Image (cartoon, rainbow, N blue to C red; front, side, top):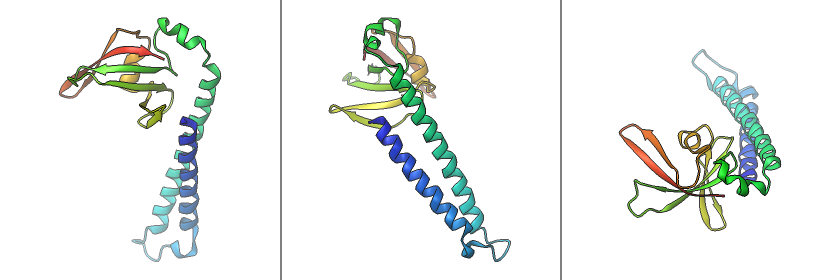
Length: 160
């Protein structure tokens, strides 16, 4: 599911880069004056989209490497603490109703929300404040994330 989403982003990024490159090199994009920057802007856009495509390609490779490393032993080794590739169930002290939240720790940029078996799971990077705080923690531990103006405490309920 994660790979499908990243591949879709990669396709979109590659199409955008190709389109921007075509527009940047089109005869009508030649500057008619020093204030005419359309071609230059398209070139910058093409470069940015190409860089994003390279980042997504690297993300795909990291996910594939992670899949090779994950084994059924992951659940058995949860006593050793949370690792990259784990799905972690947390409850936040900010919410009085103690709603469970699920986070999938990956070695790539996070932020996306996926639906896994009817459950919303947020992808987080191991380099994010929450991701770093969770690594090596265990069930029943607590993680405190400091953001300007407040601290958010999470209780670790389960590790998958």
